[in-house]
View 1: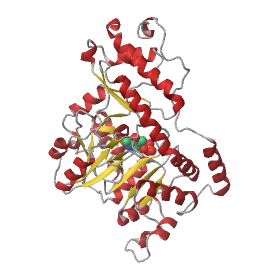
View 2 (view 1 turned 135 degrees about the vertical axis):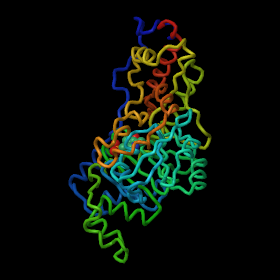
View 3 (view 1 turned 180 degrees about the vertical axis):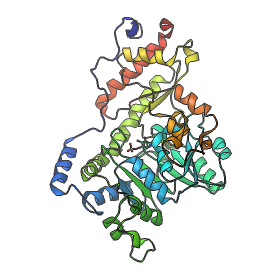
View 4 (view 1 turned 120 degrees about the vertical axis):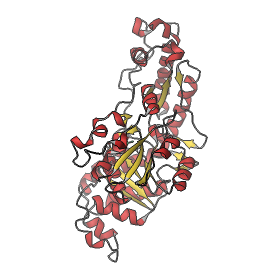
Length: 417
Ligand SMILES: *Cc1c(COP(=O)(O)O)cnc(C)c1O
């Protein structure tokens, strides 16, 4: 195979299967039946009953937490989590400079400041940089398990304990990923997850907050689940129970049809994670010795969810071939779903983080929260591309074809210069 010329230069492509090569979530008859049945049962659920209770109970027992509250999106879950954690005007929350923007953007709606911290060479929070950014106003540090690869949660928990800060988690890539056999999303005071389309667990659109802290749970309800849920779930004797009818005024409930989809998807999540683990190990083994490519450096404590396989590109090993040209050649080989992360990028490059005051009154004079360079975040972003991680035994041929395509381009890199 590697003797054929590059497809970009007129040779035969490696991947011949027609696209799209990766579809998520996988829809089966169980999903169709669950949604059809839900359509006949209830399409609006104002309290914690029916499919909402089923899904929240199943998520709580899967993660091993006391409370789960579903929301309409992951962004809303993050918003509710921050409010419930007591983040307010003037507070600073340290977030990784390299993540999807919604990890941080809800803070702008609380008068709080996302303070970006650089990442290390693996793309994980650089705790030395986090330490430099702590001030008297710092309330919390947010861990994001990017691409489903768990952060070092031993280091993070002892770091936040040492600095008397709260740990919060954005588990939007890491459903079912574990650190030392414990679920990501259970290490912080609370965690927020997305259930958006391509995420490892999908409702199409949705999200949830998970926590063991009952007071925090009540505040999550008051933030986005007003009236019946608050009236039924917050004890009448509680100081905040009198706010139950209006809550804080926002309505962020998940749609019951979305909840029905997430519920059936959840029954198959472990199988998908096991499948992805096998395929990811196979892809990493195939790429390990390919020049110019670095597979993730995984701790033995980590079981990733493999939302994607992030690969690092080292142009110096391929005669300085730019990543864009390398990927053009990979795409020409038919591996069209190898791509560079788009919206998951260094946050300080977004206008909202550079000049929030232009959109959000009150932020005009305060841009120092993102001041400073984030050289590692920029470097990691500039040198990362990712592959889908398939979960089915039927997809192993496709996974092999993708890694063969990458190895072929690397072997022929000099033909592209
Ligand atoms: C998807 C995602 C979100 C936002 O979730 P939505 O459901 O799209 O609102 C937040 N953080 C991360 C890391 C994400 O990947």
